[in-house]
Image 1: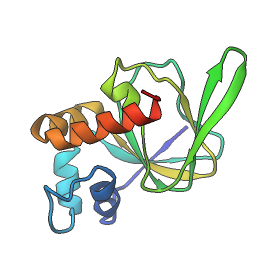
Image 2: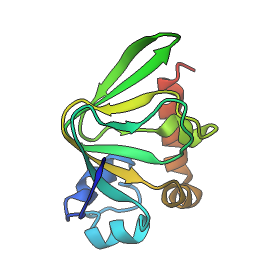
Image 3: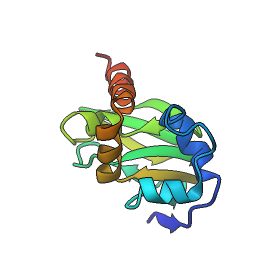
Length: 147
């Protein structure tokens, strides 16, 4: 079961480059700004081998790896394939966010890790006001889905 963690003042240092917020926040992204921008989002700790999201489930939340690593896996018929291992600063969940809200792969903690989960309502609000972020996420989803 993921454990909700308090946010610390370093969280802005993770989110700013991952979400390409440099254009909007020239200085550091403060903890207060993070809490204001993402009131429904939070940091979570996952144990090794714990599922963060599961292929086929419906969800549009976006995730950023803060510490540790996350394996992205996909089941094809009866076989499972590891697609990638994501390190700190990596985003995942963007394909379901941009498309129909159905997860096309699973994300599993490859080791104990910390992940910032961006609630869909928070990220949608930010993308509406900043089309550059929406374009960035669409391009990432396109690259990862092979199209």
